[in-house]
Length: 597
Image 1 (cartoon, one colour):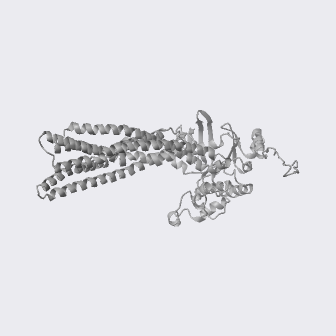
Image 2 (image 1 turned 45 degrees about the vertical axis):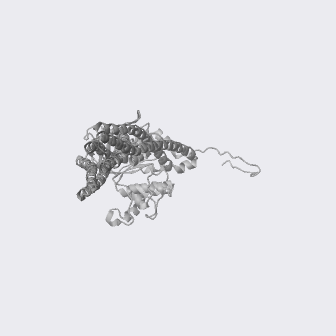
Image 3 (image 1 turned 135 degrees about the vertical axis):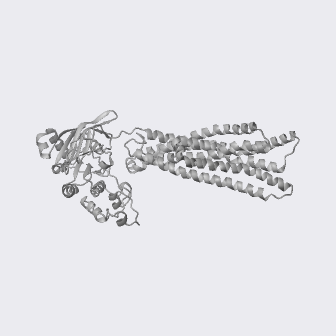
């Protein structure tokens, strides 16, 4: 990734390096014309050209420096865009991408902290490195040419300062890395805390979570104190270096001239102070920080590379695409479905066929594999298949965009945005000032109202929904997701226990008006625990231990499959409740009568 950042768009990188060199060149030539102007001034001669040229060189040095910074910032934006797109594409490839088994909130830290940190190799580290490298290389030549100072003295002095700064900079980079790691851990935990704050508050678990967050924050604070202390040492050494260099250079130059029987003139002193105190001041101050930022960028790059290298098991078709039954009346023909997670086989060699317009219900005990089968059909989990055909056409599997365009999905975990009801059905944020008829002509209000009405949800479509649907009941959130599926007008709809939170009357309306009438030509695959739905379905798949044990119509299965009949009876019976133990306070409640009923 570092090679990609530094070597892509080489023409622009070469331009940045060239301009930085021009900036350093202008800066090192300015004292030569300053000296020339001062010499003429001492002889009472005019040298307007020398003065103007010295000024032009100093202005040019600053102008080229600012241009270097601007170009590097521009390249940094390009790099951030490219890395972010690569990470986002990776995130969409499947579960485990970028974060593995770590909290999903760590992906936020990768995008928010590490992407800009990696791009800092350009807009900060590269600019600082170039602004440091060229002056430190050119300065010994200038000191030797202008003042006769030997190369080895200048180089040894600069290398000594570089060594001290490098030790401090390396230590500082360790603090920076710890800071990012702790911040990522805290961000992930805070993200989970905020998402589940209401549940945690109800259960009384907020204090334990807070203590863990505060513990991480305490580590961050100690790390930051150490980081600031080390940084102050770096700043002090880098700032003081220019003063010691000025004093040392002047003493050496005076002695050097005295040994040759010469004196040091004001013009030479002015030029020497310019080189040591002005020209080298910024590079020496930036030297330790360029190392820190460079190492920090490398640590961000490594974090991103490790995240990108995490394995993602994608669903895929093992056999040739032509192995399926080429029957256009089959909405789905999927063979050899196999799912293995953490070494355990959850679905083994299942075949799944459903005709166009058929309504299939998948039922079974908890843990039988119903939702996993549905997610395998959708490609949400890393299942494998021997073939995967949609409407008689062989495909490469559910990850194919053409296949996904045929599917609508109502998940078990209902998704709602903090937006209007209309935006939630459209699943997009809409600018209130935009013209809906112009921007989204195919998504007019009547169609949204129809979808909501068929989902038994009668609200103003412009009503605002709180974060995660806080203003709605569980049944209302489910019906919004059902309305979204209806509005998508997809030919195949997957429904994962989408009636679990609706009341009996609402369920009846949904079955009669939407599932049986409006969707009579739509292929429906429903995972459900509501036994009242089953008589309406065309076919029922009864699952046990990750396999389809029996399939058929409701009446047929009830008559010939005792286990299915027992299952229906258990699910239909009201669940027994624990006896209520009543504690009577004779002072407050002297008499309480409790009937056996």
